Length: 445
Image (cartoon, rainbow, N blue to C red):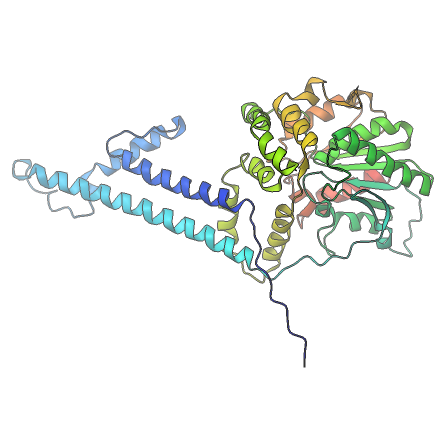
């Protein structure tokens, strides 16, 4: 008798689900409320919509758009009953309100359908991690050299590559799928690749600062340096780029090159008021951090949701139309699983990032310090490539440009891609991955 199949447990995401639902419901409720104000001209319109609003009011007030019929149209004005005209206009407004309410219900139902399809989708990530070659606390250094293809004609020995993800999300965005993994793809190009997996903070990391994490990164880099007897090419993604910048400055000649992928620097380059508001939230989050001992994942996700409140609404409404068994749907689910598989931030790191980076803009102001020493991009001496995706909604291109501008001789790559698409998108290989590999191969042992 075959073994019973374990049921697939529905996902709990998208996180934080109550916030996403409340935002969507509030959005559509406000649309309904605004439509009621249209009749008495009490709606406060965005200035860019004022002209369209005036046209809509004029349209609603014309007899040609009367849904009750045009019986009165050809009658002499003396024979028209004013009360009939009022009734006709009232009927038109009633039809308009019904249409707004109907569309709001339909759009909300579509979003909910997308969420339920995601929660019950059968895909689950099944990627076997390569063996760790170094461990400290909850951090592991994964050895991707097993993915190198034997018998390649190019036997040049390149500088080993150390991939460094953010502290906020799991590192497997760089190793998302066996068939679509940035880390494994680089190894297939003949590079010695290692992936730093921070994992969630444990007891050892409970009070870690950014200085502590960068010191650990330096020790991992030095392990690779000793094992392969070669300088290291550091590759940092998002927040990981800021960590690798500080590490490259500390490593000096042991850093063969630095690749910064969608790495922020000037947090006030765009939406400065929004960034300051996130910075001020650090004080409001202190009680929650004191109770939890860290910044919990759902609160962290809520802060990111504030950068684009309608993102969940739009993407799950779009997902509802995907064929459930399609490759496109599976790619969506794989990425969404990663987004919802976040890790908490230690309280000291949360304070540094929220209050220091977002609130005070310490990096761009020259006030960000690691172990008491200012992090000065202009002091960097190794070759540097800054990858700045043009469609990045998480790290505005101007924020990343500010960092590249301070690094002497830094090259820039500006692919037409998004923050996550540059790593997980099926079409990222040619515009993003290949130029990065070419740059990394310039560092020869």
